[in-house]
Image (cartoon, rainbow, N blue to C red; front, side):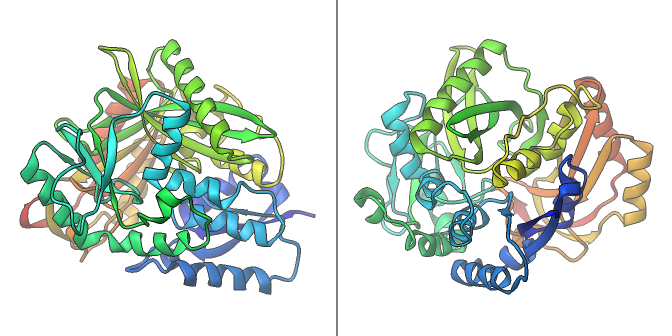
Length: 428
């Protein structure tokens, strides 16, 4: 009989990836709340958890696995549901140890040296950065995702301006995150600060990359390193590109640091991704953050280059199987998720039609286009946008090499027809 696998935060794009995976024929996938039901105008942690539990309780059959590939609250609800259903999982405490940026830094202090100077900031009361931290620095909530409310600041005025913007929006994730913390036996240094505070840390320089891996039966396995390439003169991402162009020696060092950190936390039967910066001038490595999940943004990249999406590793771990991740068995030499962005707020008057999208994908083979906006959207009102730009579309591209990849992206961008009216000033 096929295994019954419940997908928390179901969406059509990722379902297509699941359906194409090697083990899909052995599974029957069941949506467990949609992405839109979870990530709305408000994120209600308790309601999402209760709704998901009711759907599981009402299912007339075996529950063999529960999976999800999104950030909080999906990543934190998974261990709760798995524990209630008697399924193998990392503990909720281990997951939150990664999710809470300040707690994560405290763990890193104990086992590695590759992290920046950091400190806590209360956005409601503080006006100055923690003592001893130097500009430039970043200030961001201890829980956020997709760089939401993360600001790079170069001086005192910018720091205070960033805190003002954070105060306005921190509740969207901060309030449900505090509801999650009620389920965890927190150490005193975390219990006293809660989930609506900020982390300030000195800015890191260099090339940004993301390492992906998993832990199975005690062994920590690294299966890939992905480059994160930003737009010129902006911290907003232009693309995620795999495989990384970093020197092999640097990738080996990243793997060693990652193994020491994951072994200290736990994360048994879990995928993870860890973001780093490597400074080619000094050869220094600095850890940005660890996430207790793989990146769904990288799924097609691994499928195109290695022949298997990283969703497969997550699925096999949930079913207590060895992921056995392949290398270099895909159709392309390089792959990327690219972002079409706008850096000025506006109202979308027209977006490309499905027929136009299909035609572009046919003309530029090896591409998949996902729109992020629709006609009528005010860019500044959309959730899950970074603090410096507005994402109009994501373009997944497979190519023989980087030159072909960038050429394909340029062709797609030129063909995508948006009509957007300017409103307000640049997103800064």
